[in-house]
Length: 289
Image 1 (cartoon, rainbow, N blue to C red):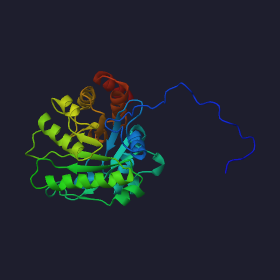
Image 2 (image 1 turned 180 degrees about the vertical axis):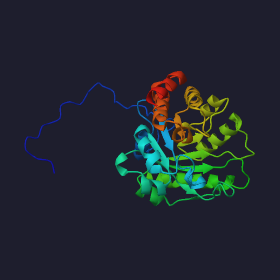
Image 3 (image 1 turned 30 degrees about the vertical axis):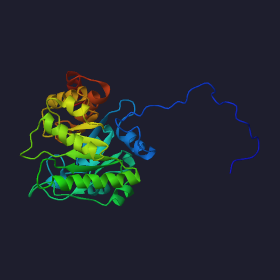
Image 4 (image 1 turned 90 degrees about the vertical axis):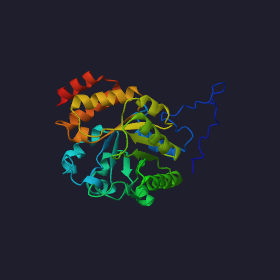
């Protein structure tokens, strides 16, 4: 209990000064509970409202793909430059040092691999996400796939139910199948479905008309990097997405398959958070490389 000696009556009540409530920096999150906002604030920098997520969950469907053969050698040295790490629970528990103290967006569904039909996934137990102290759970949605659309939407809906119960945000990840058009109409539809079903973040692909995709999505949109691009092109992709309203990037191959991964993620950080142009970002990349 408080020491009863030298009790002093309060006298600084700020009379006449309005309550200092501040708007929350993450789109669509103003009405969420404190724990949810706290986790989102770990992912999205409060100074910019943006994030640079480092995705290296590819192994759960691809195995040891190029750049991810040895996570301890290729990814761990990059952690300090990322705002958030996106990975599976197996890699997190076995190879990511807890002392890094970075927010984790956990790949929270799993199922089929590249050897079969993708996206036939089930959820992991939310208690494992809680034990791992993650800041978000990532769930794949296969919108437009007649075999798995309903199942993956149900996975998202269930994850949102559980996440809401325990204060863990959910990121809906839009999958792109062979028959799905990579255009604003499709990504706008898929992103909106993610948000309508309760996703707090949407991860999707950049496309022409991306500003409309973002405008119609009531929660933050981060872009996937997709296939490996030349470094200058990848920085241009980041720049265009941010200019069109994206709240950040969630890149993997364009970082860990770069000729200089540490330089590349720092250049991406400069574009996303510091307003560097692609030319300035590429100059920074070359200087650091």
